[in-house]
Length: 98
Image 1 (cartoon, rainbow, N blue to C red):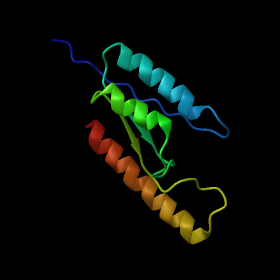
Image 2: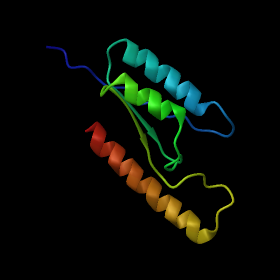
Image 3: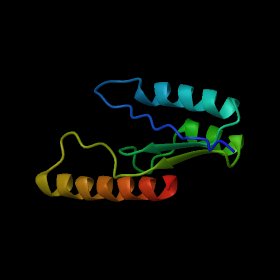
Image 4: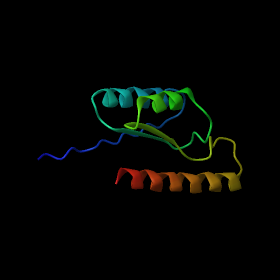
């Protein structure tokens, strides 16, 4: 029996388009019958339309929003809190993918 291998994609950069690109690829994979996990590291707990859409797609399409929100313009102590939240998000994603 051939074991299926997963694929991890990382979208980074300034400006817009990262979420749109990631969700487009994720929907293509889901449409082919694959399980999908999207981890957003700096979205915080805001409600986005894509979260509601993902819930309707069922248990094989999951979006996890982690972190504390956007980092730009934060104080040094806030930055430390963001870094800690990002480390926790990475650990949670690693655990979920194991």
